[in-house]
Image (cartoon, rainbow, N blue to C red):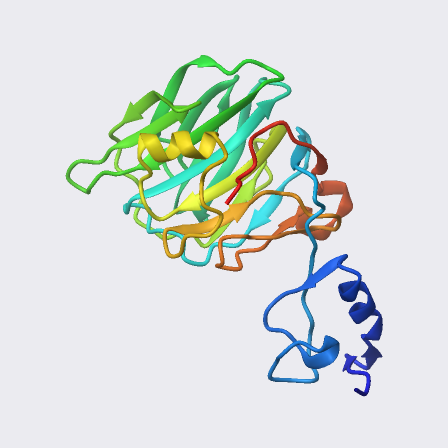
Length: 274
């Protein structure tokens, strides 16, 4: 097969890397490496392969962040769950762990206030749910925020390690998220200092039993349409974060700038076995 060119440059070297298993091609694919596609010319997206090691992301508390894909994310007033593992290094100040938002007009931010786990409105700052006590430093804990209310009876729940730690009844804003971030909010404010792992976003309110299964490493890795994002963070290298939900909501560490990229480090949590 003749070499295929991208922007006038041979991409044969990409084929060798893919064949070696170091990178995985993302859809839409090209015929360059013997994979089906509709075109022999145009941009190629290549995703990093799985490292085979359980990894997590470590944020420096200064300017590290990651931006996420948001295809299929639920409307703010529909049932939803955000779940992940967190290990806090420094609890000082206001820190964002996960933020889903529509500009500054709407969204939810799950974060820490002097170490206390909370969920807030991005727009109004209203508290959706807030725990009573700070998280211990240097320990892995599982967090799940879910919304299962209605316009007339809003209801938020925060789970910590499978147990309800806070509830609330503030009405969410009225938008669908078009951007999402880890380790900060959309203006790189409220930087997080610690580690995150096994992030999932669901378009349903998960049950207590399902959250317990996730803590035990038994959550499904792909369950369309309910699971809209799943990041195990086990990529071998590079700025890309691979979404394993089937939605192709791939993310980017520091928008590709090394100075803003959280580090990949060994994890200490139960990885999904499905």
